[in-house]
Each structure stands twice: as C-alpha cells, then as structure tokens.
Image (cartoon, rainbow, N blue to C red; front, side, top):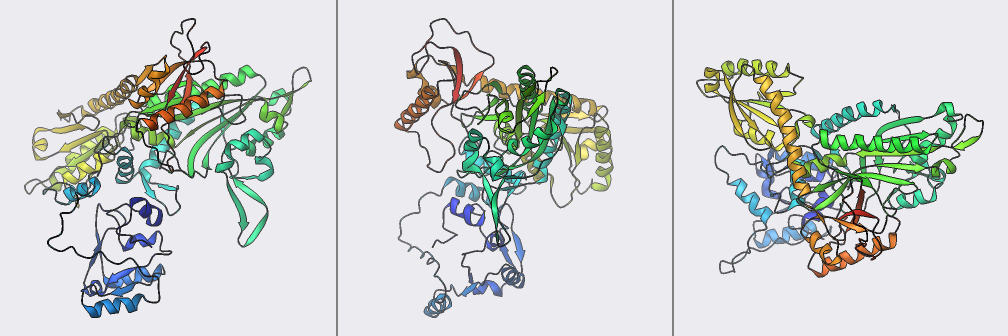
Length: 640
C-alpha cells in the first residue's frame, strides 16, 4: 500500500497517469481500481472544492454534491474522516476504515524544534516559483529546462503544447489536434512524393493469422517479443490466436501472389497509411517508443534486382527530404550492417538523426531491399517475357510518427515547441492588445484586415486570437509553447501608425513593420526561418561527429556526446559489432555512467549506419575493433 500523494513519479504515472503536483480526485476518472479514497468530511461542508484536473496548470472548482456524484458514477466509495486531530476523530477514522484495507497513515506534523526540511526537488521548486509569479505573468511555463532534465522537459513540452494526452493503457497516447495536424502535413507532403514514384495508396486489414505471421522464420523472430495477440471473442476463446500487425509483409504478400501472374503485372507498387502495434515493454515514450503508432508503409514488387534497388533509394531520398526540407532536421543516409538490418530482408538503408541534448542518435526511417526471400516464402512468381517462371524482387519502406518526436527534441527550447514554418499548423498568430481607451471595437477591424491581408499570400496559415478571456501575456506564452513561428502584436499605437510588431519564435527577434505589404515580408521571413532552423541544427550535428581510429579514444568520444566514425572490417562481422557494444558498455559503466534496468536506452554504442558519403580510407587502415584491414567507415553512437 502506498499514499498516492507521497508516492514517486512513476507510480503516479502507472496508476493514475498524472505527474507529481497534479494529483486530485478527478484523476480517478483514469483509474479507480484498487484505489482507496479518504476525504476530510469538512470538505463536504464547503460551497466549492478546488482541485487540479489531472494537470497543475489550472484548478477547477466543483460543488460537494458534484464531487459526490462524480465518485458514485465511477464506482468509488469514499471514506469520510475528520482530520481535526482529536481522539474521537481518530477512533472515527479507525471505525470508518476497519472494513477496508487501511491507507497509509498521514504524516505527523513536525515539532517546532525539528531540523530544517531538506531542499525541495527541482520540480517542486519550479512549481513553487511559478505559483508566486508576478502579476501579469502566466503560470503555465515549463517546469524543467532542456539542459537540466531532458526527459522531464520533453514530457512537459508535449503536454503543455497540447500535442498529446495520456491514456489509461500504458504506452498508448492520444494525439491531440495540434500534433495530428502536423502528421497530416507530413502525409500531404509525402503523398506527393509517393505518387511521383508511381505508388498507389490502399489499405489492408489490421489482423494477421498465426500461420501467416510465422511463415517467414527470420522475420517473425525479429518481431516475436513485440507481437500483441487476440485470443478471445467476448468470453469465447478463439480456435487460433490472431496477431495485431507489427508490420504488414505477411498480411500483404499472399495477396501479391494472387495479383502477380505475368511480367505485365509488374512493377506492383502500393502504400498504406495505418496504425501498428508493437508491445514495447521498456520505458514507452510518446512519439519515440509507443505500443501503438501511426506510419506509412510502402511495398513493391519488381521483375529485377536493379529495379528494386532503385525503388529502395528513391524511397529513402523521399524520407531524407521529408526530414530536411519539411521538418528542418538533418539526417545521415546510409546502409545498416548485417546485424542491424530488417529481419528477413536482403539489405536495409536508413536515415539517422542526432539529438544534441542527449547526445544520442535516433533512426529516422528505413527502406529495405527484401530480395527474393519473401517471394519464395509466399510463392510470388511471374512469367517473364520468355515464358519462364521467376520470383519477384521486393522492397518495403516506412516512416512513422516518431519523426514528430525527433523534430520536437531537435528544435524545442526552454519555452516549449519551436516549429519549422512548413510544418506549423498556424504559421502566424495575431494578438491584439487593448486598453480602456482602445477596445476590441476599434482594434478588432484592424486585426481582421491583417488576417485577410496575410492569409491571401501563398495560403499563409494565420490565426487571429480574439479571445477576450485571456490577456496578451497569457496568449504570448500559449502560442510560444505551441511553437508558432511568427507572432504579430497589435496595440493602440500600431493602430495610429499603421504598424504591427513581428516577433520570431525561433530566435526572439522583434521588428516593427508597416502593415502595407507586410504579407510579402512575412512570406519571406517564413522561408528564412525554415532555412535558418535547418542550418542551425546541421551545424550542431556536424560539430558532434568525430573520426576515431584507435579504441582508446572511442568511449571518451561517446562520453562527450559525439557520434563516432571509425574504420571497420565490414558489415558482415557481427561478432565484432557485439564486442564493441559489450565493451563500450562495460567501460562506460566503469567510468561512472548510469543505466536503468527498465530503460530502453543503453550507454553501449551500436552501429547506426555505413554512411553513403564515405571519408577517404587510406590503404592499410585497420578496423578499430578486430585489427583486420578496414573496408569502410561505420558510424557509431548511443541510440534511442
């Protein structure tokens, strides 16, 4: 038994899906099972009861009757206790809880002579500071700085920017409209590229039979630990369990065998936008590592290996452009080693991104040459021009909502999201500033004119925030947290001068502009911001890539949060890859690095890719691990 008010952060997340400082009775809506509720009976005498609604950035007031009704509807029987402190109250409390498991005793107040309390944890201090904010300041700021606690900062950003909400099944999350709109922009952008490759969109079922899933041995072994199974329909057990797709090769390819008969049926090129379930058990994180995620998966079949290889590279180039041109995130394209390639495939290509604050790489997207392996398993054959039967050559390639998390981590700052203009749901927000002499009746039409003027230029996505229940300071903070690239502030003086103040989100730069022709200036600014954000991210990434030719320098480079390029004896040498992973982990732990048992990340190095662009490799250069002659450079790093 634990007191939920005093418990640790992880228990709160697991049981009630809220963070410390956010606990209140309304959290029981997410999970009331096995939770005992104790209420001070004097609360029910109050006209209003104030509590956090699962988040501490605001409070709500409800009546005692409404609280009682809420608890009854979710099946919670609260125990009323008098916490006044007299003997009768104590005996009353004992009687009230004698028939149920006892909650932990409330902590006793310390005597006046007690030692001073220890300093509060950083998060509590941050909360305290915010609650004493000066007049005019918002209380919705992030509790953590990006450089102080990156993981907590990330959690704060995605919630306060209204990207996600937590769900009552661990590892599953609600994509709120702000993040889903970003995903729609990604879909719109990629669909243009997908169609240009001659690929058609379609949809296949969510479920796959056990027999189909297990038909390709290497493939199923790669996904087996993550497969979720449906075993019952109502109260009846299914005759055979049905898997929920971890990927769609085994769902689609029996259909490929039916659709492909002749060389005239090739190439067959299809894509689907769908959800996937992979039952991750370690440290699920929204966007980065979740049990259900959204993605695009392309699958093609070709008559020759060369055609398939072209398809693989074209798909990967589309992914590179999506990251670099849309999300302003630089990536390194390359080949995966034999150890890291897609299970059951011939060869895997990848684009790898870098997260500066954690010093870790993250796989951005992959494109696989499947060879003829799946064609053999599912009997996907065609009659060539000579009348002979051949097995098709296949590809598969995928891009997921992980890309949104990568973008957040690369560009976000201590205020919140920083969105590249091309992906921002609102590229510009107009905030009116009113006073007693100049109200909305005067400044409103001016802002409306600005709205029409700007939105008419290149379909710029502009929002006029005319809500009268929030002051300008609150609106500034709100839209900064959501990462809107440009804010236009319009006050009484602007009305007189025919101007507006433009504030850029990514660098805070301010400028006062005449509204005549302001739409052209904004369009140019949006392009400049997009380019500047990419160049900043690329410069940071490049400064954290280092070449190492001796093992003694390898782990120290990792400690400095570098990606490490080393000479390598070849992608087929899995045993030396294992050696590097094991040895780098041992040396890192010995040097004082920590690694949580439940964490999905490790302090060990792993191969990220063999970059397409290779530095010069002098003859006689030795592999950093085996000492054999090196055949290529390979990129290593700690990874998500």
